[in-house]
Length: 328
Image (cartoon, rainbow, N blue to C red; front, side, top):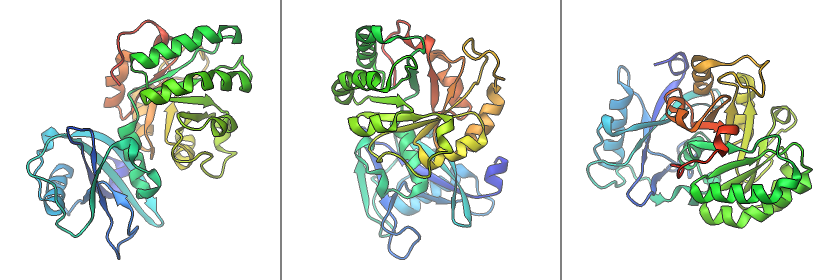
């Protein structure tokens, strides 16, 4: 257990995903904190109990099922505070178990596809778990040197990427006006929605509001200090750029995920000191939202990033080279 876990109540969450891709939610019963809200089943460790055995026990007591720890995959660890109470919510994903889940503690249960779940109905600490389930391992960002005259070419390139499996794309086009980027996003929007992909405008909150479904915003790090509350509804994704612990903490109040950079040296920002994987891991573990590794990344490093607490990798140049079908 790390220092974060040692200072907080350690709570395990079991994310059960069936063959149809649905996940199981349980409703907090009357009389409990956050009564009526939905959450992923689980509970706190007992004194001297290991995290894995605590989850085995909790799911047996709550749902009458048996899981094997070796069948689980770590999904995300979320440090959270409810008033004065701090907790570390440790979520593990399971696609197989013994038995049929049923309510043993009087709580309502429901199976739902992740993208059908209204985030507003979840307990706040469980929302990052759902976003970690929804978000892909790859986050593609358009190159900064694209000019407006290349709009048709980039419409075709982004469309092809979506058809290959890209599900999260930031339109970061600093040489374009907001209106030009919005026009490109509008052309791409129907195809993105059809494939379950999400387009994010760089810093343009108003553009995302106007375009609606399938279009979100990626907040610049400078915008984090300017905003007091989430600028878009839960139905539209919000990303945020982070470079340190303070920015990640602010992003967790406003966004669904963050990028953390630079992990490795990059030609685009040669003056920026690289974090390296150990520092990235420490910062990602302290963040209460999914975090993508950015800076010197490629598709092939997604697994390494995951092993260091990342949702996956984000990138620019290497992400737009000809690629085989993306495994998102």
